[in-house]
Image (tube, rainbow, N blue to C red; front, top):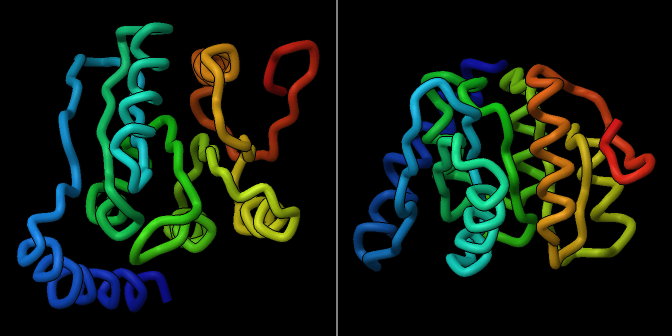
Length: 175
């Protein structure tokens, strides 16, 4: 099943998504910040301002983070296709073109992504939040995200690089 889904997504990316991206000159990724032997983070959001805000928060907390960006879920799948667990942290939005965050969460877990996956979304309807959790997200944060919450994520990650459980906040810390 995994191989069939991977082949199907690869064909979708190659035959449908890339031509649209190229034809419309859509910016799918931007700067990759490189530091060797550091935490690796993927930020998936269709809004470049939101991605930049997340990057600013992360780098102000810890400059030892490799950060990559993706415009949507299809591009994110393309980035992880060779090594699904190369990112220690994935931050993702829900409302994105081509593949919603809830769907991407499910696919990442099907592909055995077993690290920290946090949804940062403005979709505050309980049905969306429940769908995220049912599909395997570790935590859902309703926008706007604060630097304090980002610090809590990084502190948790520094102590728990390999996690796959639903998190909760107790006394300003993730558990």
